[in-house]
Length: 70
Image (cartoon, rainbow, N blue to C red; front, side):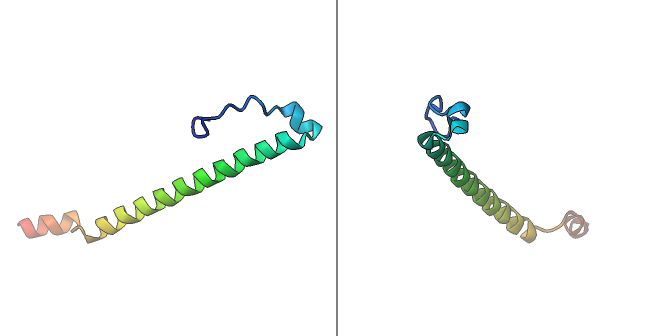
């Protein structure tokens, strides 16, 4: 994952299945970081959409512009 900028080679499925606590802890830390990243991105996207909708709400509709032009 480019976001993490960390090698994940030390976490193997075999170690997870064996119940290696350090590997499981490392995997959970990755999931935690990924959740935080995705939550921030969703929040940013929602805020951007809100700004766009607010801007669009104050713009005149095309039919109003055409009616005023004639």
